[in-house]
Amino acid sequence: MTVRTVICGAGISGLALAHRLAAEGGEVVLVERAPGRRPQGYMIDFFGPGLEAVEAMGLLPAFERAAYHYEEGHLVGADGRPRATVLTKSFARGRLMSMMRPDIEAVLAEHLPAEVELHYDTALTGVTERPDGVSATLADGTVLDADLLVGADGIHSTVRRLVFGPEERYLRHLGLHTAAFTFDAPDVHAATEHAFRLTDSVDRQMGFYALRDGRVAAFTVHRSADPALPGDPRAEIRRAYAGLGWVTPRALEQCPPAEEIYYDQVAQIELPRWSSGRVVLLGDAAYAVSLIAGQGASLGIAGAYLLADRLVRVPSIEAAFADFERLWRPVVAERQRNARSLARWFLPATPADLRIRRLMLRLSRVPFVMDRLATLLTGKDVTLADVLRRAGDRPLGPVSGSVPLTPA
Ligand SMILES: Cc1cc2nc3c(=O)[nH]c(=O)nc-3n(C[C@H](O)[C@H](O)[C@H](O)COP(=O)(O)OP(=O)(O)OC[C@H]3O[C@@H](n4cnc5c(N)ncnc54)[C@H](O)[C@@H]3O)c2cc1C
Image (cartoon, rainbow, N blue to C red; front, top):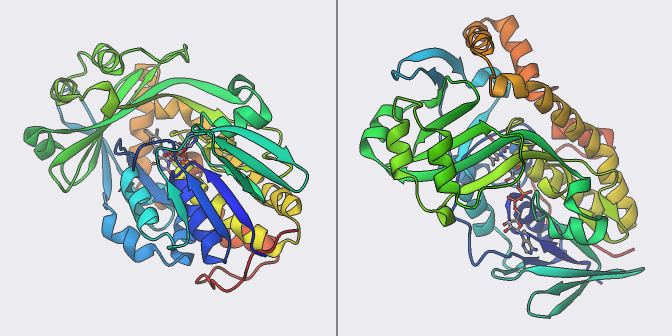
């Protein structure tokens, strides 16, 4: 008999897990609340363990086709002049690609094995745990029975709330709000081409990437002690970023309506346990590291790879969940600590901190400093291959597709 998995959430983590489980012969139902692929996008720096997993899944060429390669990032003054430049390779320690979030999801969705059932416009609203399985109730009343349920439903996870308790227990607000949107403005596109650009400003900053279709992807971060989100994100963005200079007035003018904006607090998720019986959390739902870490997508995909690997190799589902957590928690906990200590440099609070950040970035071209900076920005150098080796597994390689998942 084949194991049946219901995955809640067709984001990066849920799609990657569906891909791996189906490739290993599992039966997978993926339910996604959004009516279709989510178009709201921001640029993701993609490197480290997630990139290793993508290669092992045979998806690297497809990722490469959708990727951007920005070799430099500039901190830009209100007059548009670069004040400091960083080489992107100085923090990735190896291969790095930049990808729009919807493009990552598109590649994963387009390469899902045909057997995966993917249902959009389908929200999970209830979970019933049983000793030998779990049932997921959907918004229309349908009940899906499964051997296991995976909550890959993001930082505001419904599965986590239903099974582990209210969000407030696990969410740590990092004192910032973030937003992302895309817009059409040829003048801004021309001013932001070929490199990533970030305003060199105190307590609020806007970053820009010129996209190949002529649009510009903007992201914003500003300080806000209040985790509550504004009723009108566009009005809040226009208020918070007024007077920032350079191309920012044009970006604010072109900012789309609320439904096309991604807006949230910057936060991390910390739970004492990631699983309960036949339910496990994955990706941001279990261990959001925040955009300060710049690795949430990478850790979502690598976590999916590892979870699927444990489910294939460990004889009981509960033991596989425990093994996944034993191997993966130290990696994400270190990323979370690192992101918290980096917050001061990610968004400087004083002109003096701005100057220090500029100096650090200028020094990043010195090889010894580059290494130290990589550790400061991204944490210890841990590979997915190391983690699998610690588990006693084979080195990463192409997916076999031949091992049927069998229930405990
Ligand atoms: C501005 C910004 C920049 C970032 N930059 C980087 C970066 O440079 N590098 C990097 O690696 N990471 C980055 N990240 C983090 C990264 O985007 C996230 O960590 C990653 O997308 C999390 O993926 P996920 O699949 O776990 O969750 P999500 O992307 O949140 O997906 C969860 C899915 O579950 C669905 N869902 C929710 N509730 C339900 C329900 N009840 N029923 C059914 N479906 C449901 C949602 O609609 C969604 O599709 C950044 C994040 C932000 C905000």
